[in-house]
Image (cartoon, rainbow, N blue to C red; front, side, top):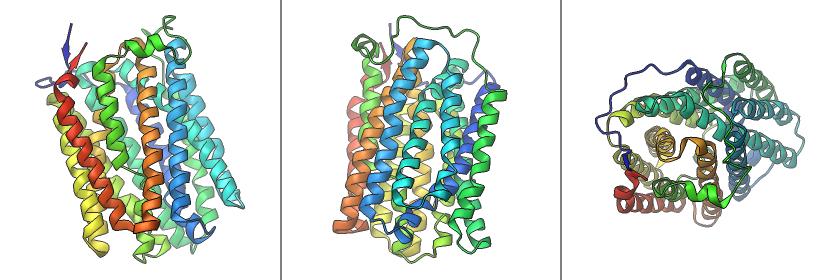
Length: 404
């Protein structure tokens, strides 16, 4: 039996569930907190603590890879246990508890530890949250649901840097004060999980799935799923950490307190595009939408590499945000489409593991290229990897469109 996963001609017929909205606002508040800190952290590490660009790349890569590795285990455990909310709550709670470490950290080692624990929390919540969205959402509105959650998440991702910018101006560049204020929305997100996120009544524990990761379970994931994962991995090699966009502001001489403008612009475009693209993904060919998103990343990298000054930075950042809105929710919908219902947590976990390892490699290579050859070569290399991802997607498009 095969099922077309392009969703061409599919029309939404149901409202997006309240649980999706709740999880979207949970993401929004946590991202406000995280981005208030992370929007300043790369510049803080370089200008205050004396870290190198390579160090920033290694730290960011390790942080994201840690989150990805953790997602494998939390996703599979949520399949086995049949309850996802507890893991979602644990993940957001852990992230909230790490936030006070950032203003208290006396050395870069403390920041690395806090970033590591924060990303463990992200890993614990990520796959169960995405699987929970798939559990409570009808297939015909799956793209819109993932797009909505991503849009709300990204609203927080531009509100956070915006607040950081205002507070840096108001406090005359007092990093610690901004970091302390960032603690508040993190705990608001935990409260929303406790009060408004519910388990779907139809989901029960699947005893056919064991705590990760059995070979039999991975073999049950169809070829179409692994092709989605492969394309995402190649794509992620081109999409290294946004920390390098922040470092570009420092290279161009933008004042420290204005550095969050980069994340504000990028995430504003991301937030505005993710939900509309999700709606399109329910009505048209999802694979074609991914190709458009890859093309946008190539354009962003080329602009950042070869268009000089603040014009190049601004246009490149906006294109970067548009490519994120055109791809991230679509990838999540494709994973949900191609994975068996009782293995969704495992599927999202394995997907994020592969993507996280690719992001680690991409960030380390980007940091090394930045120091050895400069920003232009770094972004040009990103464009080359994005083109490779596009070529791979064209090759595997036909088998990816079918679920076994």
